[in-house]
Amino acid sequence: MQIGVAYSEPAQQLWLRIEVPDETTVLGAIEQSGILKKFPAINLASDTVGVFGKAAELDARLKPGDRVEIYRAITADPATVPRRVIAGDDDE
Image (cartoon, rainbow, N blue to C red; front, side):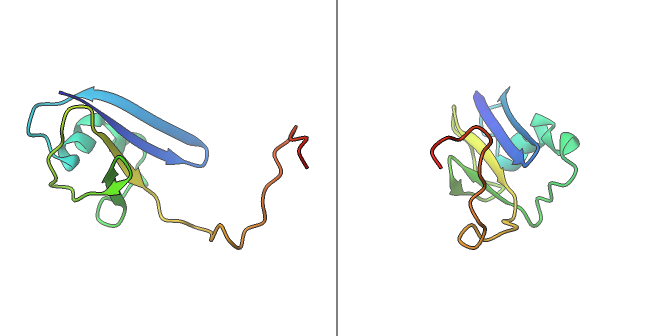
């Protein structure tokens, strides 16, 4: 079955489509994707994972078309960080 694995850092984002056997778990998909080698900062012992935006356990079974997401910890509270002005944004 085909699934996706996604991870994002401020400077780089990666979304992979991979073929995995039926009965693959979230952990199995992450390992098979190779994403742990590309992003050594990922720590599955502390980082939250999910499927389509909903938190999931590493042993959760996947369905065809699922997108596994690895979430980073929030480093700044969006409510307290001033809005960044994007170069070329004429609305302000």
